[in-house]
Every structure is written in structure tokens, then in C-alpha cells.
Image (cartoon, rainbow, N blue to C red; front, top):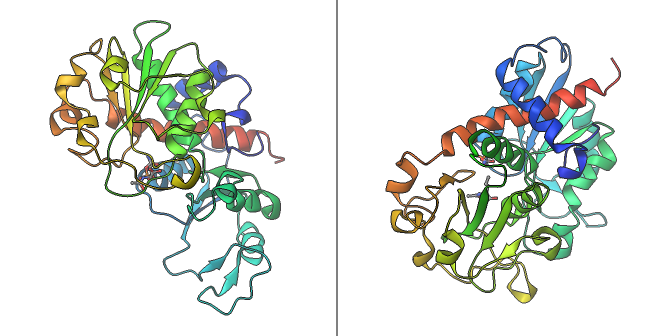
Length: 319
Ligand code: AN0
Ligand code: CP
């Protein structure tokens, strides 16, 4: 594996899950693989889980790790070429990327959608500049359109908990006070569509995701109907994708909050969310604290997905 930016960087998903479960069982079995190698994690946006789990994963493999928060202590970076840099940005990403790359062997990047321009976001302008100008393997730690380390952890978690070969998995939109990206739901849909699961997406009208991510998923606008017989409920907020509404909040309707009454419509479903989660907007205290909530196990699997990915990259690098 050279880069990890989407599901397309994994050729055999079943094999990858199998390998992840081995990594989980014996995390220190490859603890010299990354000796004298350095992983740099570059954050343009905040993080708790990704920051810690990716460092831990790299350390389990014997790597050194460095973290740079671009907006705290580093120079503000210009990302567009051709701009006259007479504003607040002191450095251009076209110098910063090769400089950062010269100090490390693998680069992780977190850069969310900016919502100024849908085309720029969906072309992954920032992530692709890292791939093009670093000369080093690049791992997406959530980019504008996808969060593949999260989706891989989600798949591992579902595989560990599923009771039937083809569980019903429901991705439900839920309300949130701030504008959030589509990366997590896009990516989750992409990974679920690559399985044999019965996969359903439910959201209010206007919150349709990009067709290339919805794929063959069933879209059900009635949330209660979608929940019927579900084995997994995966909640997430996202902002609108289509037309002039791109990056806008169309609804904060709390009748979409996941609560115990709605969970009772399911087949005793597990509750999942990538975290961070806003309680009593996305999900009630009762549901997230309840016995079917697997959000902490899901977050713990972020170390496993990251370690599996970094291991594969190290294994395919020259010594
Ligand atoms: C981000 C998002 O929705 O993409 C990160 C989630 C992992 N969430 C927030 O910014 C709250
Ligand atoms: N789920 C996730 O990526 O969390 P952080 O934003 O805290 O890294």
C-alpha cells in the first residue's frame, strides 16, 4: 500500500479485516517494523481520537511520531497557487509540504472541507497536494470528502458484533448546531456498499449525499421505517451537499434525535457514532449510555485500523 485515502487503497476488504483482528490480538508483534522511521501527523483541524490513536498505532510498530497543528504555532499556510500573499498567510503549502516531508517517512493529514467551493472540496485539493509534492506515503486522517480510518474501524466493529451474515445497517442523519462535513457519512456509505450488508440511509429531504457515495444504498426518508428491524444504527450529522445549499444547515429538527423509543423499533440494534457527539442533539443520554451503545469500542478500534494501514505501508516501503 502506498497511500491510504479511501477504500480503493484496499484490494481485499475481508483480508484487511482479518489482518486488523490479528493486529488487535497481538499489537506488538511487528514492533521493529518501523524502527528509525518517523510518522508526521499534520492537523489543519481539531482532533482527539485521530491524534491519539494514529500516534499509538505508529508507536506500536516501533515508529517515532511528530504532530503539527498547523493553526497553532506554525505559520498560516496558503493553499492556492497564484495568490499574491499580502494577507495573513506567511507560508505557501508548496514549500511547507516538501519541507515537512523531508523530516519523516509517512505523513498523516487532516484537512476538512472548507465549504467555499464544492468542486475544490470534492477534488480534495489539499490532500492531493500532499500526495503530489511530499514524495512520501500519505494517510488521510479525514479529508474533505472521506474519513477512511474511521470507516475501516467502523467495519471492524460491525464485523465483531454482527449476529448474522447480512445485518441491516442504518446510517441516520441527526441534528447538530454547527455546519459539519459529509466526509464521515460519505466514507461510511462507501465502505458499507462494499459489503454484503443490507445498507439503508435515512435523512430529511435536502440532505441527499453525492450519488457516487450513495451508490446502491437504499434511501428511506422516513426515519422510523428505516429503523425497523435494524441491527446497527449509525448516527451522524452532515450539512447539505446539493446545489446552492452546499455546506448549509437545512434543519435542526430534534425529532431526528436518536432516542430509546426509536431504538425500540430496531432488532435490539447496536448504537454507533464516530464521536465527538453532541448529546441530546444527535442521541439521548439514555441511548449512548445504554447497553447497546458500542461507541467506545468503535473509538478503540481506531488504533487497530490505523495500525493495520501503517503496517501495510511500512511493509511495502524499501528498508
Ligand atoms: C467532524 C466531522 O463531522 O467530520 C469530525 C468527526 C470525526 N466533527 C466535528 O467537527 C464535530
Ligand atoms: N472520530 C474522529 O475522527 O474523532 P476526532 O475528530 O476526535 O479525531
